[in-house]
Amino acid sequence: MKQLFYRHSGKIAAAIVLGAALFLGGQYLNYSQAANLATPVAASPATPVAPTPAPGFTAVANAVTPAVVNITSHVARMRDRGSRDPMDEFFRSPFSPFGFPFGPEGPMPPHEPRGGGMGSGVIVSPDGYIITNNHVVDGASELTVTLPDKREFKAKIVGTDPKTDLAVVKINASNLPYVRWGDSSKLQVGEYVLAVGNPFGLNSTVTLGIVSALGRGHMGITQYEDFIQTDAAINPGNSGGALVNTAGELVGINTAIVSQTGGYQGVGFAVPANMAKPVYESLVKTGKVVRGYLGIAIQELTQDLAKSFGLKQAKGALVSSVAEDSPAERAGIKQGDVIVAYQGNPIEDPAVLQREVTRTPVGTKATLKVIRDGREQEVTATIGEQSETVKVASADSSMENALAGVAVQSLDLQTARELGLHGKVQGVVVVNVEPDSLADRAGLAQGDVIKEINRQPIKSVRDYEKIVSNLKKDESVLLLINRRGTALFITVKA
Image 1 (tube, rainbow, N blue to C red):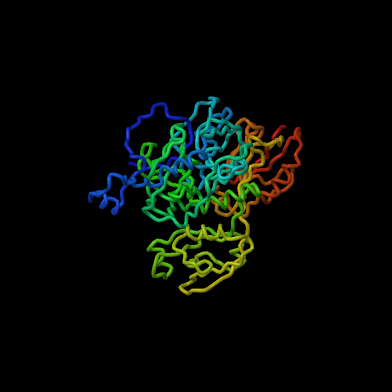
Image 2: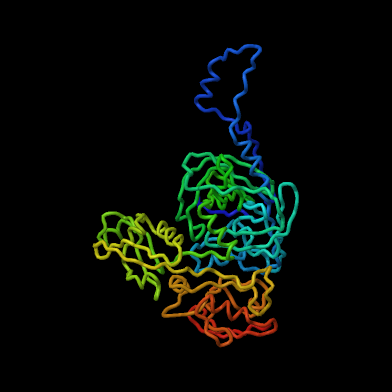
């Protein structure tokens, strides 16, 4: 049967089949304890034998659950776009790198009110900063955070990062319980972990499992993947919840499962803390995530490709294209190069190179070892800044103009190819248009490339932001767009 990835925010299922399970308070026996129990202990009647202390699962659960919250997203009315999730259309679209939806939800009838969904979040600071999944809050017009002690707060989105499916929200509160960040690089396969969240709206649910695998990539769940795989039970509503170690430290954010049914089947994935923490810190500090950028499209080496390029092993990242005027082009990296090392670290596959580059500070001079025409050589590239998707006017933004509700991102070489664009096309690509917004009514759609605004050329996200921020509330806008290779003018009336 076909396996599907599910990200678990959304409405509570209409029917829930619950299986009863017995777990003895987190108590387990190691070999020495078993041996002690097998041998009778002689004790004086005046000196009672102290019971063996229970392991720390109970203490960990008691410490962590007060800081794991329920997040309810309220979404405005939406017209049918083939999916309930606003970003689902992007993930289904021809230029999406993913090609499948977030979850099991199907089409929605036109103009049906959408009540939103439920997910989880983790308080990571006493002043109310909460980390969760992007898909839990995406498209929400209003967020409600409910603490385990039943207190409710309205929350605002501090920032989102769809490329890792992470988001940060903030509530106005102080002296809150919170979970300490842990070091996910110290996790080992077989180590016990606890998943804490709100599956099916059942608040403060704790499940136990082990780390099944580390460094999972190539899953097609997010653009940047380095997942912790666990068999701790994760179900709808767990998204954005905590994965903690036996010290009660946050080592991951529960994100998705592999399932044939949409329910738990023993394979769950969490974004590791060492990936989530820098994203969190960057979103809190700047509202965006700054990543390193090299400017190449890379692909995995098969045995046949390795043989064709004169390589003994199918290891490394094959450069399939180099963006114009990019750090890679300036460094002399060429199409057909095989990158086998980065900053002295071996590159096993494209996912490893992607992680290394994106984590490199902008401006760093990075040394890459490449194999070209069978010969090994070194090149040095100055890492640039990767352009991020920018939401010019989100649902809670105070900005009001003709392009409110339009989200765009930079147009790189790979995206241009996926859009079927040929030659040098400049502009920004539309990744989301809020339903019933002025731009939506004018016909602007996902995949359109905005080349001009009011006859002013748009070459970057920065150009777009600058012009849009100066638009007046009642000002109509003339757009020149490229739609699948065809130039069109669109007027967005304010």
